[in-house]
Length: 137
Image (cartoon, rainbow, N blue to C red):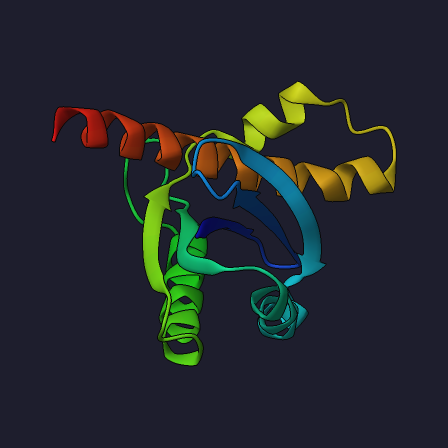
């Protein structure tokens, strides 16, 4: 089963997917946040996914911001709408900045893609965590 990662923003949400072996994180797409649940329904109909990771945007000091609260509300909503998935909030500090640094956003399409790239950075961090803990356990 694959793992999904979301980088939720006010206007756009980046989506990334792991491969079936849960080794590689790949940017998948960027969707309008208002259409996120319908986009996820379509994705879940095509892909075998049992876990969702949601970027948790705390401040650099680790405190909660308005954006943190919005993402936590969306995470609770997604848990209600898709209760068969395991949903986890995952620290996303610097993922958006890494995505922008990895690719200069010279066009609107590249800017949109940067959201999916940020989701892939979140997912890559989580997959690294899983790999380390599976090898220790």
